[in-house]
Image (cartoon, rainbow over all chains, first blue to last red):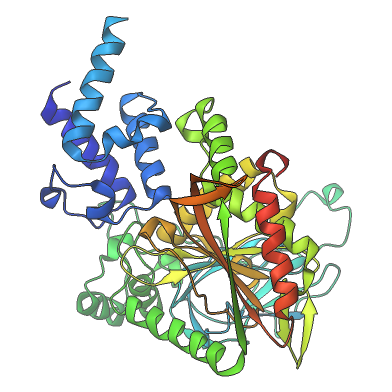
Length: 86
Length: 393
């Protein structure tokens, strides 16, 4: 899956949690929780939405590695290539 | 015959607009069934009925705003005859008599209005058509209740009032909620002599327990610290029951069950504190499931009337926003509110040495008419003790 495709999936997952956000205005380098006012329930639902779309179960310990949109794309790329290699 | 009335969904509600009937005359109902949807300052709420029987007659049309306590429908108790004057009965259809074991009154309702198939000519009264154009309502989305399913003026107005699925809250809803919260909080500050207590809680064991529990759970089954906090509050209330209940008629009336109102901030402003019922009897996993479901429905619609009127205490957790300490305002007629702040690494004394521990400030706002600081202090101490042994929760 390309970076663009991953970005689209992540924005869709975010929109399912925070429907009022404008996907075009998300700063890819800024912390998602701060920028979109996500609480821990929102972030958990975001992770669930990513899991539903990509089938990747992100361990809780890895949450800090998905703090920004850019970081999340990099993390999911690695996770997908690791899954592909198995 | 009894009356089903517009319920009060909290100290701050004066009226509600009936959006939709989910049952029709002739339908049997039992306690707990959702029979209508009502629009309030808190959004669209599903209204439950509190008795068994049969809907005899609907007294309020969708789209009408009525005050709390106004009759919405007549309910026929089992065995009762229909109210007079009876609504026009449907043409009798011969029923297999053998199946009617008891003398049950025949349902008198008209069949549910059928949606107009796409492309079909829409039957609509001239007044309704004009109003639909004025309100910008798509008549193809309306089920008519007039003769032969024709769309009447009231149908158009009901459709305009009913929030379309997944649509944003109607304009003005945020302002209405703001004013409702303001009214309830002004009453609280005017009437309730609050006292405030706080204590710092070492959350090291609780977080370690959660981390361990979550390691083996799929993302859909993971726990948040909120579920643990709710359970701890419920258990601690068992030890200090004078914080759980209502101040009514100049006296404290203790609640038999522990229904914890969980304050949920709504994206777009305002908050709502629906109840997690019987929190003391649910496991932490069950509480987490209830919490997720509640947050989803609070934000997306579908809260039930009982969930808005049943809370016996409120819990508010503002730690995600980085707040250290919450000084809560009690939601009348409740007598206490428990607040949780952020969990942050702090210097903490253990066995004569200083170590870094994750620490959280727990606070209690309580009604001095119902309890004293000494008892409130015992509650916070019990809460702390319970959080030091998370596996027991």
